Length: 281
Picture 1: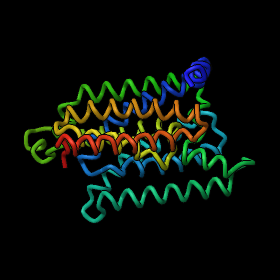
Picture 2: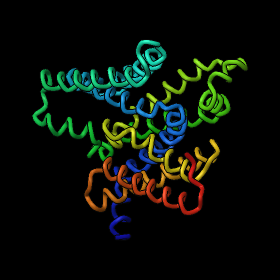
Picture 3: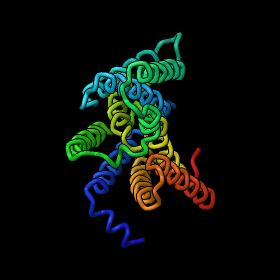
C-alpha cells in the first residue's frame, strides 16, 4: 500500500490534488465555524448551486476559463443573499432556498438546451459530485487556488477579532461602533470565493460538508471560539488529505470519500466528547 502511494505521489496531478484539497479544506474550516454559529450553514449549499448555474453558462459559451464568470456571479449572489436575508419579509433560509434552487434548475436547463457535449450526464455528475475534476487540475489552477486561499487566511487572521464579535453578538458589536454589516458582507464574499474553489474538490452538492462537519466535530471537543477554529482547521485538513489518498488508492469518487471521512471524524469526536464530558451544545 505504501509503495503504491509513493508511486502515485510521483505524478504531478496527485500532488496538485493534495495541495488544492488541503488549502480548500483549511479555508472552509475557518469560515465554517462562523457560519455554523450564525445559523447560516446552508449558505454554502446555496452558493454552490449558484456556481453550478454559472458554470453551465460558461460551458455554453465555451469559455476556457470558467472562473471569469463563476467567481463574480457567486460573489454577487452572496451579497444578494445577505441583503435579501435581512429583509423582514424574506428570511435568510427562504432566500437561500429561492436563489439556490432557481440557479440550479436554470443551470441544468441551459446545459440541456444549449450544450454541445456528447456526455452531458457525465459533465453534470462531475460538477455535482466532483468525481474527477480535482485530478485534472493544471499548474495554473493550483497557483490561483494557492493565491486565493492565502488571501482568505490572511483576511481571517487580520479581522479575527471583528469576525468573532459579529459572530457571537452582532447587536453588541454594532452598539460598540463595529460596522457589523460590512463584516457580514466580508464573510459572505469570502464564503463565495471558498465555494468556487471547492467546486473542483467535492462538487456543488457536497460543499456544505466541508463547511459544517469539521466545525461541528471541533465543537464536540472544545468550547472556545479559538479552540474550535484551530481544531476545525486541523480536522478538516486531515480529513481532506486522507479522503484524497483513500480515493486514489481505492478508486472511489474523491468528493464522496472526503465527506465520508468527515462523517467518521465527526462520529469519533462525538464519542470522545461524550466520554470526556467535553461536548458543547
